[in-house]
Amino acid sequence: MKEKVLIFIFLIFYSSSSIAFTKKDFSNNQLLCSSLLSGFEFVSSNRVKVINTDINKITTINEYYYDVDLKLSYINIFSNENNLRNRVYSIELNSLRVDVWTMTGGGFTTREIFPIGLCEFVKINNFLSYVESLK
Image (cartoon, rainbow, N blue to C red; front, side, top):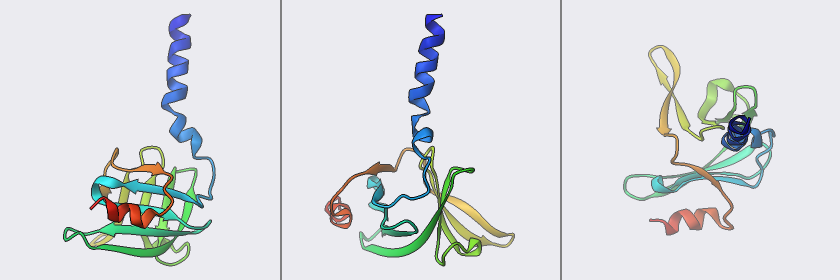
């Protein structure tokens, strides 16, 4: 009986990340991928700033639209509002893996750009300055 209780408690804590994501509005949330000097700053209920740093340590910011698909546990990021053909990134909510959407000979497909474990939700006052300070 004690083993079942311990397993139950473990499962609750282990799955807490998926339980926590039950909303579609990520306003004022920030997803930081510090080792890659990149991140996502959700500035409203449908807009996100994507911060990327290239190999020359030049940081760029682009603003996109986003929508949360709770059934599939993804945040989809679009260049035009909710236009599936203009999807740029997808973030898997349970693992925080980030995929980029690219055009291939067979159509649109995803490529993993930030694997599981590189990104985490943070609370930082000036997100861009923080990313710049990591350089």
